[in-house]
Length: 238
Image (cartoon, rainbow, N blue to C red):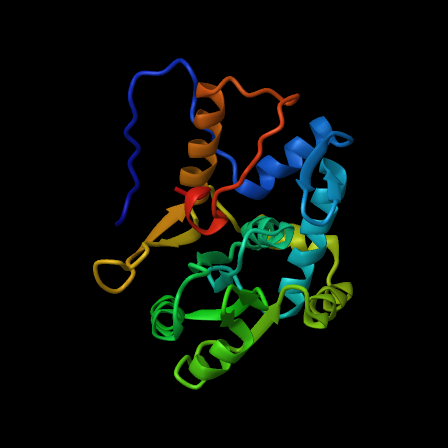
């Protein structure tokens, strides 16, 4: 029998035992009309209520698209609000989000898609000189698990969301009832500068408590606003 153990130093603050989706729901209930996410580049803004609704819409679409608990959903994208939506939506349905470095070349992309078994990939249209659509087509034949790619900023994103109309809140709640804070939620890959990229699997418990205690250390409150100029694919899940 496999058992889990926890080890942590002396602290007067208990570890959180939530899933990421459960924790988001509590934030929505507590701070619904406060702003949760601001995209300076596009001017788009979400309150916690709006953000929670957008996450639910995408989560239901992923359910409708056949994404099962434990399925690997890749994101190969530069910083954008959709990146954050994918992170939370995959967490709500028990999928494992695989972060892919936007600077990867074709051989690195193929390696990560194959090794992680990514079945659905979210991607930017381009980054610097890289045409992501063309690069995905180059590796698709070598990645048998990959069955769908959704490009951010492309009509495919809206088509995916429209599919979610066929799933209800009850469907989403049923999936969430299957989840534990110890379930995997993210596979974080290294840069691959010293060899092929290496992936580390993180749980809801890992990611949520890491973020919580960083916030505690910096004395953040619900009134603070945090500017995030660093790459989402690397810095915000470690």
